[in-house]
Length: 154
Image (cartoon, rainbow, N blue to C red; front, side, top):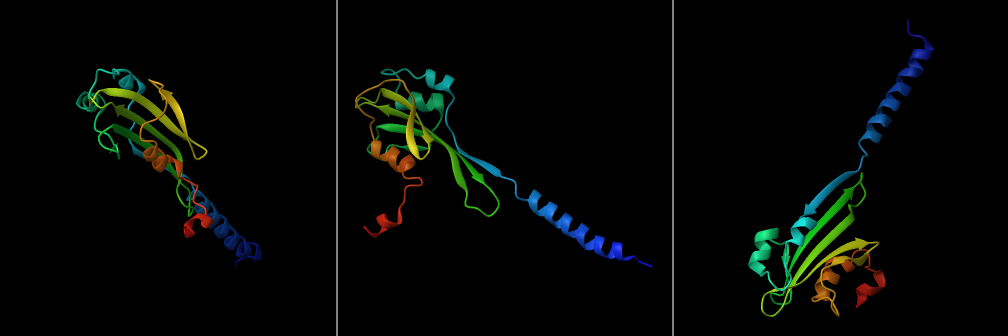
């Protein structure tokens, strides 16, 4: 004969088992996208000497070319965190921008990160008055998390 304590214990044990399995399924998953060259490889690029072809030979093909003409190569890497049913969130993004002058020689090598939704320069090999192709970098990194409902009506 089954006692009353066994009858109430079985549903509770089942509930604990279902909760334990449900919570174990809610672990964060991380996905890496893209490629950014190592600093050692970037140090091999000689400013004013290397060309687009030599840069691509040293660093590999870029993720994106310049939007304005042929003035730059961009290497982009992102790390995305997915947790349960929530929308995936970009937790890390890095961009290496190699810009060229009108003669096709390397003018600048810069590394940018994403800190709290803002584009942050992490390192620059040449500091000049401004960054070439700002609009591309701002489009790529600057608009994350900045869309406001009031700005959608034009």
